[in-house]
Image (cartoon, rainbow, N blue to C red; front, side, top):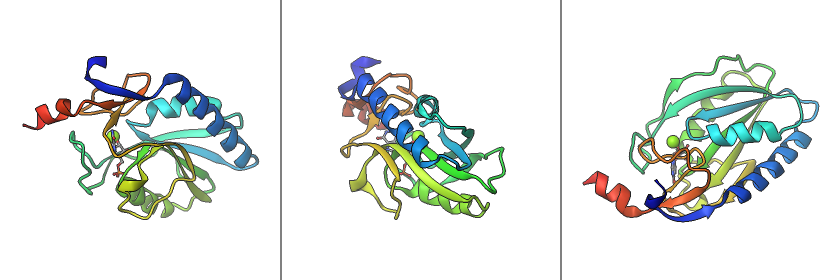
Length: 182
Ligand code: IMP
Ligand code: MG
């Protein structure tokens, strides 16, 4: 699996340090609020598992799954809810936990849908941000790392459902996805 990686972009140590810092900040900002962390499956599951343990105030968690990508590397702009939340959102201060903010199409759709359910507030926490690629008007309130416009995998992020279990974030060798799209 590691042979398919061009280079490690963010190491395990860097990830751990950043997650602790984000957890500290979130714990401060949400003190006295009704925090509900919403993880967007499946990419954010590793980040969520680490981030929730770095949060030191009471917090609920829930999961939803949307698809916009199929198995390729470019967004289709076509967002569909595959699995919805279990918890009704009224009265909650939502923190959407995302793996990566790319075009922003996925989050922009999600935020519209979730606002209709009357939460008290909605904020976004993304581990990775590719600001150059933004097509929708979405900004992260908490963001871990800016990454270049290259396809990255690991720490939850996949290419065609693989590489999610790499403990670091790396750049995939282009020949890996070029070979498969032929
Ligand atoms: P957006 O709608 O274009 O912002 O795409 C967001 C989703 O696309 C993320 O939640 C990821 O699942 C996926 N994605 C975007 N860029 C990458 C990448 O470089 N590697 C892996 N998945 C990505
Ligand atoms: Mg994904």
